[in-house]
Image (tube, helix red, strand yellow):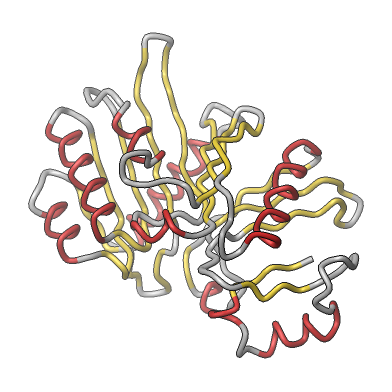
Length: 266
């Protein structure tokens, strides 16, 4: 069962092959829905693949050869039926609801959390709320962002500049779709700025890494998924995923990955 954005994919060969093979009857076991509306979520769920059951993939990667030439990340959940059912339910919401998909979230995925857009705005932005809550002194915030622009982008840029001024260590890697006002705001500050336009490919990530201390001890988390730092994200199906950085060294793996990206750009 496949849902694709009609505006972006209807004219390509691959969706035509899927339509011929799967049909378009949503009452059938298999189907393709070429949906109206601006669909940007990138998720896969499998009841079984090979000998493994209950697999979910979440990330920033489109199924295109352009994506194969970009820097992306994909998170996998394996053997977790509860997580897979969350994504299956959301799939049905999207398949039936586009272009008017109901909001959903936040939804707990064990130690992680997911927000399914639309349904948010600048006053309820879950990214802004989480970054605003970070105590700046001693904090480290790293962002790798493909698209960072418009009013939401400026809100987030100004918040990060303020955190940096107040004592946080803020570092950003800017992709090709960074707006001029956002770039000016960041480059005119003490924030460490790097290019995400690299010789062997561009960043397509939607990553925010946060590390700080709370009264309970160290806090580490990663925000990823399909949500760019743009107002457009509020109005379409997107996924923001918060990964608990204390699980299985996740934060350290992402931190090392950003180190490598920064080194490639030097």
